[in-house]
Amino acid sequence: MQDLVIRDADVVDGSGADSYRADVVIDGGRIVSIVKEAAAAGCQRPHAVRELDAEGLVLSPGFIDMHAHSDLALLRDPDHSAKAAQGVTLEVLGQDGLSYAPVDDRTLEEVRRAITGWNGYGDDVDFDWRSVGEYLDRLDRGIAVNAAYLVPQGTVRALVVGWEDRAATPGELDRMRRLVAEGLEQGAVGLSSGLTYTPGMYAGDAELTELCRVVAAYGGYYCPHHRSYGAGALEAYAEMVALTRAAGCPLHLAHATMNFGVNEGRAAELLDLLDRALDAGADITLDTYPYTPGCTTLAALLPSWASEGGPQEVLARLRDPATAARIRHDLEVTGSDGCHGVPVEWETVEISGVTDPALADVVGRTVREAADLRGETPWETARRLLVRDRLGTTVLQHVGHEENVRAIMRHRAHTGGSDGILRGSKPHPRAYGTFPRYLGHYVRELGVLTLEECVARLTSRPAARLRLPDRGLVREGYRADLVLFDPETVAPGATFAEPRRLPSGIPYVLVDGRFVIEDGKRTDVLAGRAVRRTPV
Image (cartoon, rainbow, N blue to C red; front, side, top):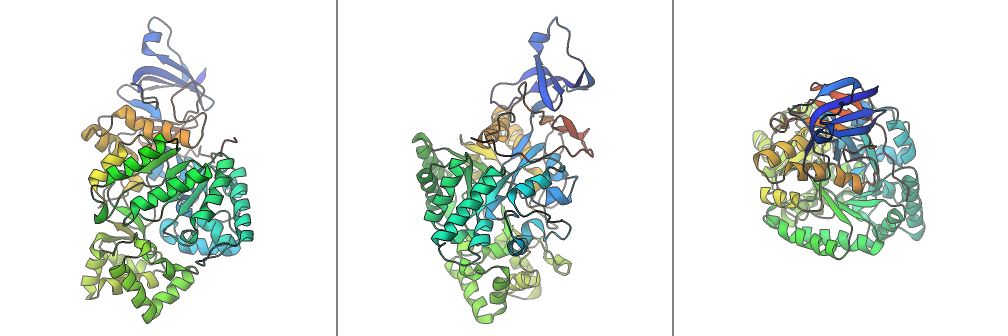
């Protein structure tokens, strides 16, 4: 007897082809048989130890979150319903050039401080790893869903060069090449950058190109958060396309948006740039989240010169009145490179989380609203928060455009990613709602994508980018990472007012053939493991 048969499911197999009705048999964590309704006519139907009636439900491959910030959440929160309940069965970590491997003791402390707003400081995590391979081994002890890892270029630079704004020496570049190669040899799937975050933003194109040559040699891909999503966004996209073509490296554009007033209605220009590159032979994919606001840390908005040297130097500059006045001018008048070259509009910056509980009264307010309540200028409020919260404050930036979101979503290179920051009292609802929002709002309600198109963008297309030979499709022999959802009711529960509500209409999720969501509830199964790069 096999382990499980899912009966009478409407299979949307991830290929983009039309759905079909079938019984799907699972054994040993893999799909062993698919019996289509027509083939089953007059034949004995398959049986198993457990039989699940899927009448009225769609069976699809599990969703792949191409841009996740669960690097510590997977370790500290075995439940991890934020992703499991959405039907996510694989997350890609190590994003935006900053994560926790490879490190030494100094760099680990610096990185923990720098991205406290993304993942928390990690007091509740035992950092018993230093290399990429050791981090992946830690994930292999059992996590809620599977995880792949990108070598974070900013962390590599911090380890070798430090947090200074200067070019790497030839010897330093050689060491960075070796660290990237070691990470890929140990199982990372590619390289990420955060080119509006320090210290990754201090790397020039020549340095990045050399690192991308290493990535290409190992069959990985480059995933940049590029230098601007605001003023100069098109030039920043073009820079990444040219850089990776010179390196012969596949490109995956992280959270590919066109934000701020300067880019309203300009998605077609980005898509034309990408189409020309694709038609010329470039290997390009991208991911987006189906919302208009972005999410980052308040400290990320600061100009790069103010962030040089690491978190302690940033705090020292903020405490100094003359230097703080320079920072304010860059933010409010010039347009900080940390704020994508656009002068900050404090009424669009909503405080979503703080690390100091004494500051909780500002959460859910814009910086301008919080300032008005205290009779301060917005800069005074922002500066006070940055210092008192030790750079740990997270924010939503309401700077996106719905027409751009929809246009990019339709592109042939598109995949889905939540960019979900799970910390803070009021995180962005994309952390809990991205995948059901695609299926409910953009497929069922708006018809921006067909169901088959959408599922392919969330499953087989990202699996192809990750070079996973046995995931992303409902196929015999493939791993049984699967989701069952009701196409008539699937919807995100998360809203901006209540961002941690779980979705509806997703009663079953399987990882490696085991139920992590059953009858709409999280089980105690920890079937997830590290998914390592497939050798070339």
